[in-house]
Image (cartoon, rainbow, N blue to C red; front, side, top):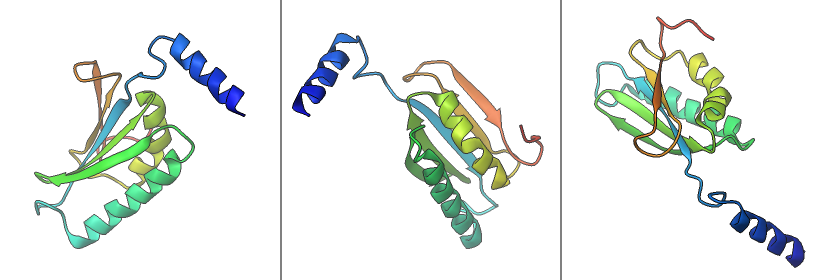
Length: 128
């Protein structure tokens, strides 16, 4: 078993950037009702969404890093090796939660400064 682990470690060292490839972030910005931190029912609904996302991510597409509740939004921060694959894994659950108009997701293909894609969510966005 130790020989297998040593071989894997040697392979990772031999591949430039394999062990240090930065995760690609996806942030889901969910607009809350008129209160700065949403209503109690809304907070509970979004907590349920977080659990649904964690279940979807158990397959290895990424992870839920943290949530942030500020300025009328709940922002779910996710990260994984491929932002597009990560979004594909969680998008059905996010859209099923029926985000309010003004909600959106941001996919970034790399570290800070890398190109970003903003995906509108909410009632005005048809499901894909």
